[in-house]
Image 1 (cartoon, rainbow over the protein chains, first blue to last red):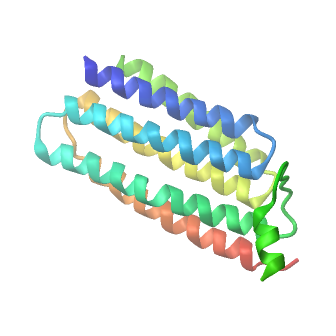
Image 2 (image 1 turned 90 degrees about the vertical axis):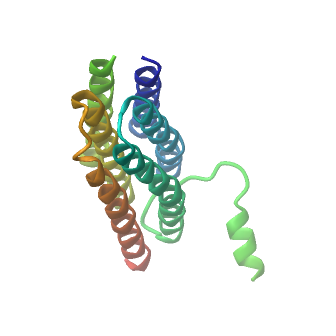
Length: 107
Length: 83
């Protein structure tokens, strides 16, 4: 019962990140919504499933998927952000301080 | 409660599919595909809970690896494209 509740919480987090991806008006904001909320969602779903699933074999497979998502989603977010920033034909808006441009201007 | 998880994850998949179809740039489509793969991993895990057998759980691990590789390759492609 508590495992199913945790899985439902993770699914709601993934739905929230999907709403952010469809509603935000900027590539960088959408990517931030996808990677932060859905990482926590995947981790909650797998933790809830390990409470419910009976065998160690299934538990380790689910936790391996969660650990791989935790390791790779921030890296892919950084890669997409850098590519979006460098590519001149993709619209992105930075509202406050653009520290990357300042650092590249000094270099 | 498992049925509610199915419905919520399928709604999230539909929203990511909308972003994938609408674009407007290539980075948005990559974000849409990434989100759909996250939903697919969660759906595989929920299905394993539902049926009680985890025969498809290694497919979730493979999906996580493939999504990272495809995202990094497309990011490199976006960055190297000069127009």
